Length: 322
Ligand SMILES: Cc1cc2nc3c(=O)[nH]c(=O)nc-3n(C[C@H](O)[C@H](O)[C@H](O)COP(=O)(O)O)c2cc1C
Image 1 (cartoon, helix red, strand yellow):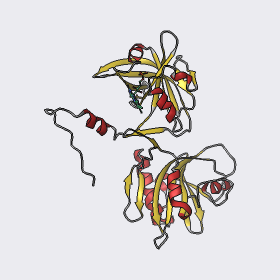
Image 2 (tube, rainbow, N blue to C red):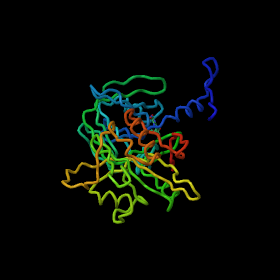
Image 3 (cartoon, rainbow, N blue to C red):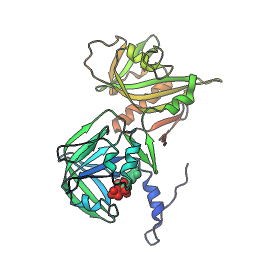
Image 4 (cartoon, helix red, strand yellow):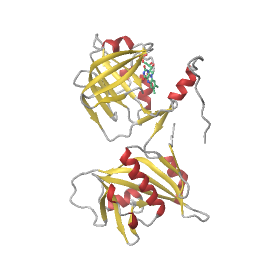
């Protein structure tokens, strides 16, 4: 077990650097907060302090340092927008975390309903009117009332311990496994899990590698042949199985079937509600235990990444910082 680093008590001086390091353990997304200044020009900065606040009314918040050069503008603004960056937008995060005078010349953006700019290609964006500005120490809390939003299927960019994190398909895991890999998918279709009826019982769709869809042996090829249009979101589990000298590495992604209304899907497909999975028809104990964890975490709406072996796995975050 990792030894905890204990923070100082109230009587002792607080080590700000250590405090920041402790806060950095909280994984966030990365956003760009934007507005239009009184002279009509756009203004924006990178922020990971974005948080959802309320569904009804729809409120979000972001914290702005009083030392930021755009602090005065945002403390007075009547409208602003928050763009949640996609994982291919690290450079956008860098631009808006800088003091550059021409940030908006370096990225593509569009004005939304309030006039506030939104970054093209963002995973999501929220167009807001200012609901309240709260003074909070060396920051202000800018609370926005969402009047419009957009979201896409792009994977969001993550941030943890001062580094960017990729949540999406881990090419590193695939490369490490090489030819020993079996690549599978835990797919949801509306409220059900996609399982395949095979002579060896119920199985998840798997291939010998991830791509391409033109290769019938790859996961993408298998899914295409089954008539499934799929979006794979995140790496969910990596474990060794089979034992012996060259055990295989099983890599599972979680994803969704895109409901295109297609008339045909393969008759081997069984879509089973998550709470009614026929566990005794799943013959591979490692897959069964992974799916049990999936169902449990799905009901809690929280995921970890399972890294271990089939006997004694532990749940860890797999931060692939670049
Ligand atoms: C990942 C990341 C997250 C950040 N989050 C915040 C934040 O939540 N609030 C903030 O005031 N500054 C944050 N910053 C720092 C500002 O982006 C940075 O100070 C920027 O220069 C402010 O722009 P300005 O000087 O044009 O106002 C963050 C920077 C990075 C790289």
